[in-house]
Image 1 (spheres, rainbow, N blue to C red):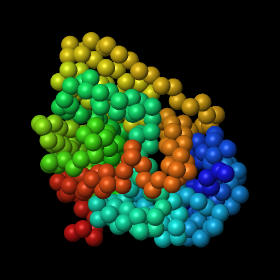
Image 2: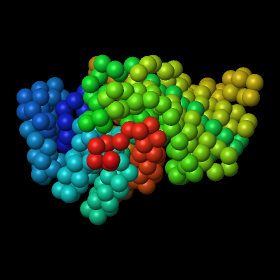
Image 3: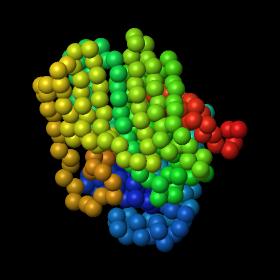
Length: 338
């Protein structure tokens, strides 16, 4: 029986994910979509052949035909929407960043565990074949002890209102930095850094325009993670060990190619993995790769798992804590944090 999805929001990311689910018709079906505006929900339903469109997200929570809620709403609503779905016994896949603070992350995960349902932050990067290959290479010791992860993610989004406003939880760290942080966290086994420090500047709106965050880990390892909504970056990443290094080619958060080099920068291995062939005009880069995440979530739920070993609930809490400290170092506080 197909896993029945209810969509919390009808935005662009939801449209892309719905297209990926529709490419897996035997195992997944979008049965309902909700938006603040009913016409928008109906339009989404028509495009994606969804049988039920609702105005108001509580309708998804109350729909007995929905097994799992996909939360693709704006960042500042994730906490409210995740709790609503969990309290009605739904499995939940919530887009990243999971929520606004570490305290909120702990609340959500405590509720998921209380309800005994599957819950995961939607860090889709973790399910790409390239990321699986990276885990294999790092785990094999081929690179030697890992000394540093460097990741850059920046796009000029100054004309995107949501990304530049504090009341929608905008800023470089929450919108872009999450991807760099999750990469470093994966490489270093999801452990809490021994220190977090960040520098950069705030826009006039109070959110960070550019930030540079340094994470330190045991055994003299570290990560340098740069994020921006003020200008474009190369958007590549590197994992450097004492023997070799991995270059994760653009786009590092949803990649199809990595290069392994020796100390003299001689490339000794190249691994490429084509994206799933999905006939859809996607809104964002390499979004066909969301299919990997969909397949994994479906399998977890079939197996009765309550979380993913590739993106654990505890790691979501660690990442939220890193983002809190990075924001605060820059002077980026939400109004209720002051």
